[in-house]
Image 1: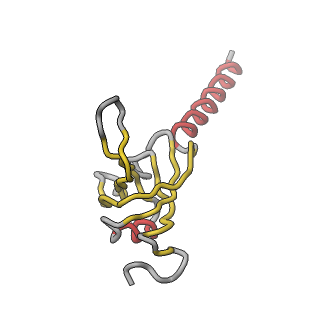
Image 2: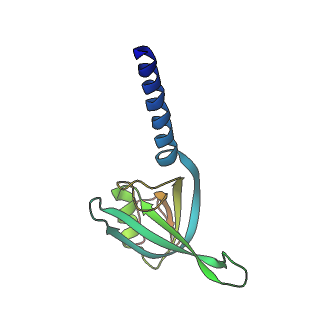
Image 3: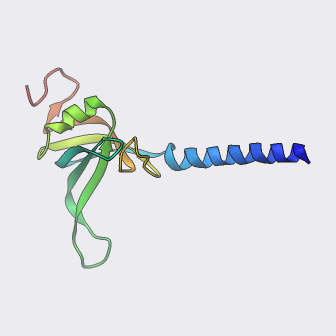
Length: 133
């Protein structure tokens, strides 16, 4: 009987580990979004994370007959990304992101995590020049 308890516990640990990985660490999708950076701020009670909102052109509506702006709320990963976005408020930016199924507190408040800034108002990030130099 003791042998079956150990096997059951091992199976339970494996299943719980797989579920936690799937819900919080599996990258569901990756992509690029572009729009005007509405705000970008560092906030949080225990884990201070960078959070922002991108307003995209056009409108979307969850129900017929209603209008709603097309907003992309995101968290930013890393100081390099944060430094580029910190001074780009109000500018047109192009961002590469990863989508997770659920957020974790130390990664940010959003399930969308920006991993790279591709462009800020027509300036390439690959050169040493930035739009702020």
